[in-house]
Image (cartoon, rainbow, N blue to C red):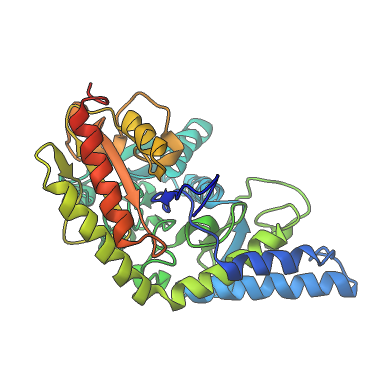
Length: 387
């Protein structure tokens, strides 16, 4: 990947923004040449509506859902906010006013829960995390009662790559009559996702995490559930999300999700080999620790912490060498505080401040991985990023 001149850029931040797949950009370009509004009645509008439905069908097929259960939105963040508000409003009618949220959730879920609680007078409680990064199911089962309206658990943690036991979590929640929201932004297109097998009632995803382009996301909402729209207007998306659909981004999402699911097994195996190579080289350093459940992580994500190191400063030094990574989640870069995910895992704040997340795809080579590992070790050893 070249940004300027002849310098090669090693892009290892795919969990923040994946490289758009060629099929996605082609689908977006085709949609941009179509001027019809999908809600109209003339032939151009009907052509747009057909493209919209085709994308909806592809998204639904990728996660084992029905097309009617897919609501197109702008991002997984909007999807999560819609899901939390909808569950809380419906739960309040039945005297269910508690929201149980996994302590390591993405801020799109955590902050949506707190905002909804302020709005509706609900209570937010955090489900503890075990030291390996997985949800504490025993603690969750004790917390979950018949006054809970929503339980939220992500499928893959965006910082550590740890895969969560969503199916067992959903079984516990449903035994108490609560709804389940799953943030699947880091798993769709990378790992098998089947909403029926997982048992979730709602699921959020973003196109730009699996080869689409920013501006399109989706909310799976199980048939029979009521959706409280965040945006009022003309009643698009079956009155669940008003506003003319962003057809180019949505069509790109449909193309990307179909292609990424089709190549998922092979891509995952190759990316896991790259991740393991990088992990082996970094973990050999005495001050660098690998974070998360070693046996059950998404293939592309590797989180490490360098002791007595400023992770954001390390990311900036790596950028000077043409290596793009995140210090924790990309959406929280610039914050002085340590990652809430790592703190919830029981990692001390000093070590947590030295976190770096590498997220790879198959455009990264073994030579790139070796160059990244060499640069990290050299910068850490130099003392330039010591705190």
